[in-house]
Amino acid sequence: MSRPVISVRRVSEDDERAFTELWMTSRVEAGVSPEVAARAASEGRIATALHRDDVRAYVASADGQPVGFAVAATSPFSSLTDAPCVTIDQLYVVPDSRKHGVARQLMSAVTLYADSRGCEQIGCNVPAQHRDANRFFARLGFSSQIVRRVTSVAALRRRLGQDEPRHHSIEALLHRRRSLRARATATAASDSRLAG
Image (cartoon, rainbow, N blue to C red):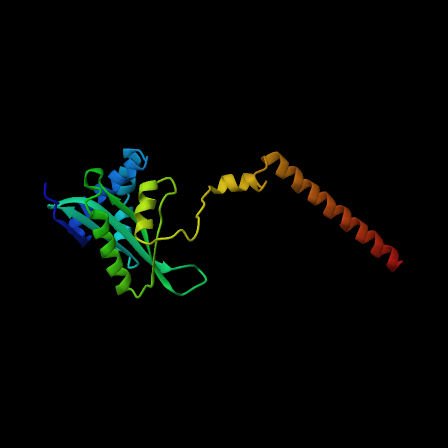
């Protein structure tokens, strides 16, 4: 059985529909419901992202059929440096086309993009639980440099003790007001004694 002919090109307006379908497939495979993925696509998020100057998307085809995509963005490596870095935000290949060189072809396109932007580093966002993806990037020389941890604002607020029930925060406010009044009264009494 011969290997399919793989081609990679930057996503153009003609490719947006195929790209969107692949993106929705990747989201569903990641556990998002088809309805949520379709809603995100219909809200124009993809089109908006594809037209940003700092975002580059590529679609891979095997024998003329779209089988994968890569989305990369250029930004400083950190907020405290000016050195630009290309970050691979998403890399996806449909299951039937994996292990046929599609992802490597997409990575070649991203590498050329990084060179054209003057970037010396390429980073990637890989979910910790995706062992195959982590192995793929490790084989290409990507090392684990940071661990990005994520939580919701509400969960962090609870952990920090800032998510007190409303009645507790009202009690705290009343307590502060009483304390300020008591201090003001004590200061006024002291001032009147000094004046007299």
